[in-house]
Image 1 (cartoon, rainbow, N blue to C red):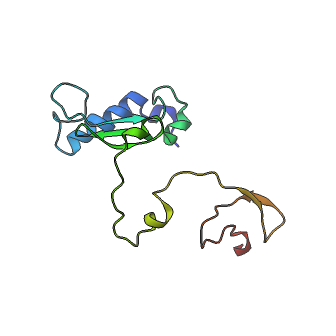
Image 2 (spheres, rainbow, N blue to C red):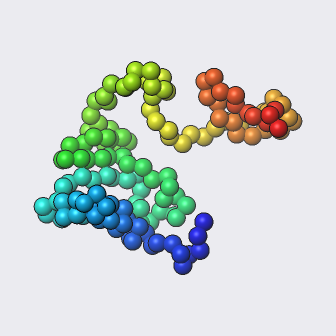
Length: 135
């Protein structure tokens, strides 16, 4: 989206996300760095932030999140550390029916029923699927 000379390098982006966020929330000195005396809130990512291709950074996700010294989220190889999920509130929330929040999925490629072509279609309960017919 931006020219190379108008982008932050990875280290600066991470510094602003961590130490910079602690300044913004007026918690500098108590969080934002992994040093003695600061809170030990940590997220273990699904891949190495510093070595993945730039276009893959957006696909990184936490596989272990520790807040206040306790695991609050765990998946993949850390799933045995996962705490029990809290009750969904409000009870009518779509999270209760669909089992969680957004996670990228690969949509199946199907034949379009409106036009003679095939493409990936998001299949959702009660959804319209392909909207080619609308155009």
